[in-house]
Length: 124
Image 1 (cartoon, rainbow, N blue to C red):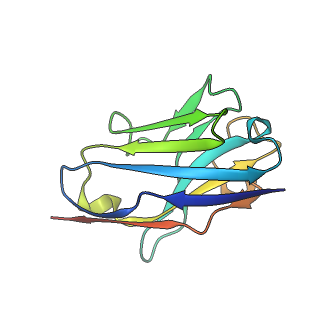
Image 2 (cartoon, rainbow, N blue to C red):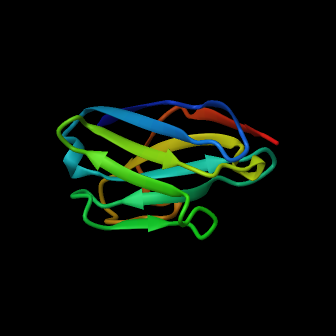
């Protein structure tokens, strides 16, 4: 089992940047593919980005391509989401997730463990 704790959320103006971190504890971090999801008010949870166990391959949703970057440091048991050029449409609770069985999952059921989430609010 793995425990996940997100940090780095907050209030930012449109065009600004934030860096989210997700610290993992428990089983070997490098055993898990990692993903970042978000849920905006009134919407379903959606995948923002994902990264393979080794960090060699990544996935980005079309709506964040060129603006967000996912990365991981297996030595620090941490996955990051660098978010640039933020817009009010990016306002949501952001969750990190760990998955044992899917190499690069983009669905919620591809992931086995979830953090509590961190709020990101982008003002116009």
